[in-house]
Amino acid sequence: MLTPQNQPIVILVDADACPVKAEIYRVAERHGLKVSVVSNMPIAVPRDPLVERVVVAEGMDKADDWIAERARPGAVVITADIPLASRAVKAGASVLGPTGRAFTEDSIGMTLATRNLMDDLRSAGAVTGGPKPFSPRDRSAFLSALDLAIVRLKRAGFAAV
Image 1 (tube, rainbow, N blue to C red):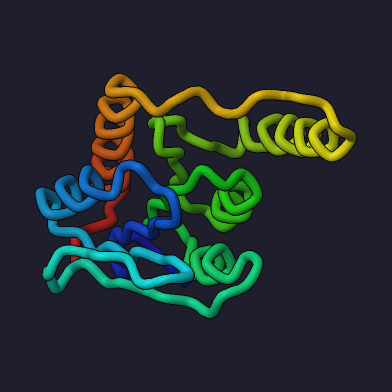
Image 2 (image 1 turned 90 degrees about the vertical axis):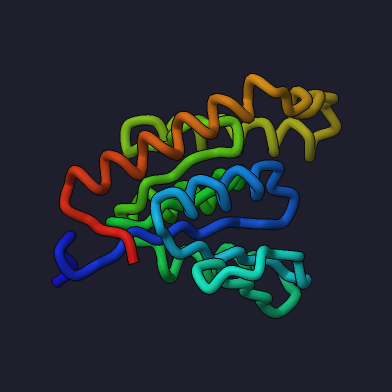
């Protein structure tokens, strides 16, 4: 059984198009946490024994599957992918979007339904626009949310590596 006493905090990053990787590395270093940077293609990562580059096979959802298989209580998953966020929340992970938005059991159902509705509208030819540009405010909100998520996990008994 997974308990805080035998599971370290880990950060799992859906790295393709993630705009906050540098911030993740900084926060992880400060807290002494392992980071797995998951993508379909090699991505430059710091030379740090706590940062692991994971390159999965090309294909739909391969990176998502790798992350979802490792999502658990004590893991922090960073993703903008709503279906992956849903899978990670269901596995008990703390889940954050790159804007600092926390996905929780209370919010993920409506978020997933909205995402699916927008996807259906786009498939039907509706012009729905895209996400707003990533801003310095988003970066700041993300840093605060990541630090808060880690502090909560430490208070719950999870530890650094």
